[in-house]
Amino acid sequence: MDAAPTAASPPRSLTAAIATAWLVAGTLDGTAAVVTYCVRGGRNPERIAYYIASAALGRETASAGGAAMVLAGTLFHYLVALIWTVFFFLLYPRVALLRRNALAVGLVYGGFVWLVMNLIVVPLSRAQQPPLTPQSVVIGAVVLMLCIGLPISLLARRHYARPGD
Image (cartoon, rainbow, N blue to C red; front, side):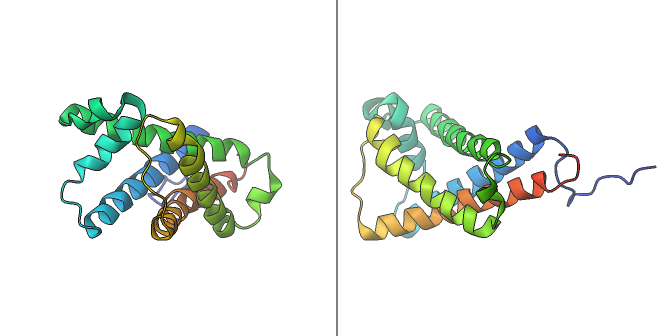
């Protein structure tokens, strides 16, 4: 008889592995955004969700605020995290370099995500792009390296290391 799975057991399916990595990375990144915002003196963390919603809905609509915009911003945030997670999990078995060093790969992937989001996605969106200062670049890149790249890389390695997967 097989042993019952434990909380430490890796996910059994690719879908479960992606869902786990997505929720971990999206939640870590969202939490880091709120903490960073509050440390910088922000008093209403809901504004983060309004900003995210403004990328798709426009600044005027998103700035109206309310629960609908918080929900929209949160959903868009998790949608973006899902896209980055699925992208990495699809590349992982096909690109040998991604399987070499999960820590280094995760940090580099987070940096790549920062570059794409800040130099392509945000400028093409309807969101107002904040100025890129050396401090904002370092903080933003480090957050994505630690909160997006690293957990996705580590959880992908964990999933694909299972025999038979």
